[in-house]
Length: 252
Ligand SMILES: [Zn+2]
Image (tube, rainbow, N blue to C red; front, side):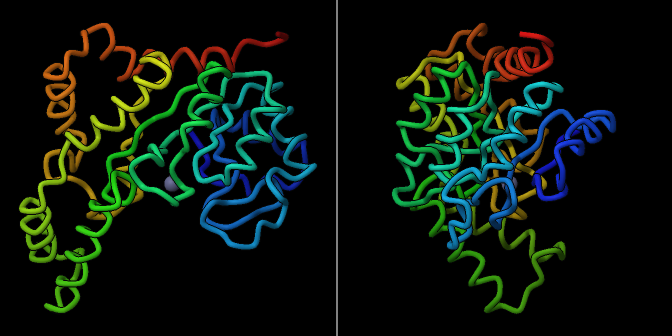
């Protein structure tokens, strides 16, 4: 189990408590700054990165064996995490800022390289929100049309309308594979994972990668691009398992 937000960690002893309850990764912050870290979606920059308490939380997570998830954090906070952590980190759902200039929620090349040096893994998300400046615009336009028609996004008609709109836009597994290619070219396949974020992005998903039944479409695209079966196994699970195992080795 994971916790997407460290906000419930009020004291250092809470870290071991959540570990006992089965938590194995914590995203330090979500959409707002908290007592641990700043969030890329917030504007306040409360801590200037990781707080002093946040540094202790990272050390305690390292000690008890909880993965530090740097998705959602500011660049400064991620740099602070990497300076403190003695274990590889995970970005559970973060794309490449290369394709979305100015969007801090995605990782810049410098931090992708830093996470690779740390031995960590970047799990690429699939949503229009993360894929490109164009995919974001495509989704916002479709959503606006949905609202103009008075359709509810959760109704069968709303879903059908959005699927039709998003299919004509052409955003697809190819856009996701572009992120995977970009990370491979920067740091190699050993630092790439998949971070679908299916429960976090509503209808903003490519029609050929809209739920877990469609993973084979992405794998077919990677095969077309020349990825070996061994590379694909690493991307699908082995890299993340390697980082997870490193976080569970005590006393190192
Ligand atoms: Zn998220």
